[in-house]
Length: 224
Image 1 (tube, rainbow, N blue to C red):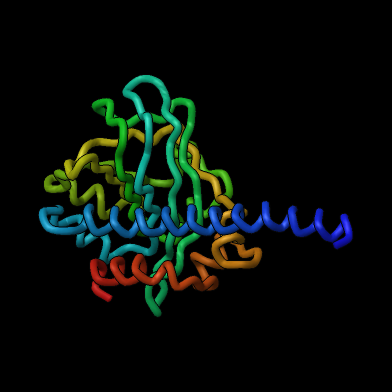
Image 2 (cartoon, rainbow, N blue to C red):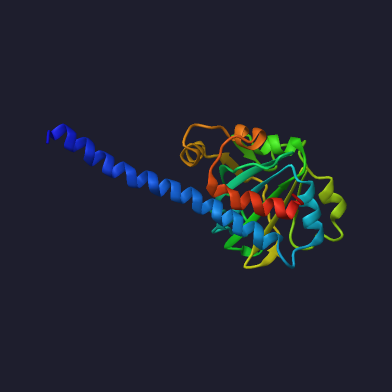
């Protein structure tokens, strides 16, 4: 066999496992996001949280946010963003969250974060390739733990409502200064071709059977 052909085959042998791992990594994030939604919206979650989800135009789900401290930053985590159309929830677009000053209150080390997007303005803002919390003065973001009661008015008038939970317990979350950014290479790997987050979240493009459980569980908690 010619040396050149041997070299090509060896190169492909290296690339194919990498591609398989990339697909697995993205699907693992989608699966974790599905479990996070089930845990955060399941039995024992606040009724007002369900009401907010039924009004949602979209959601950002970060199933694991690591190494966040009270004073100094952590590494953030990977997230998926979905939109809600008349036909139902879209497939996910991939994002990352983090910053040098990102911190969850009470020193939480490993948390789930759910951002419920209630307005088109909030959805378009999060879809920005580099969105920074606290930098958009015209955007109303409410952050809550498990006790929405007493704060319902503020929540329902916000563009985005943020929740976090750790080991099944809701806790506060501080987002100011945090950045979220689109992971275009993950979108391409998951859907098999280049596709933008706007096309996925706003237009419902992009299809992968692995995203169906996430769409189903969101539909169940949002009333269809």
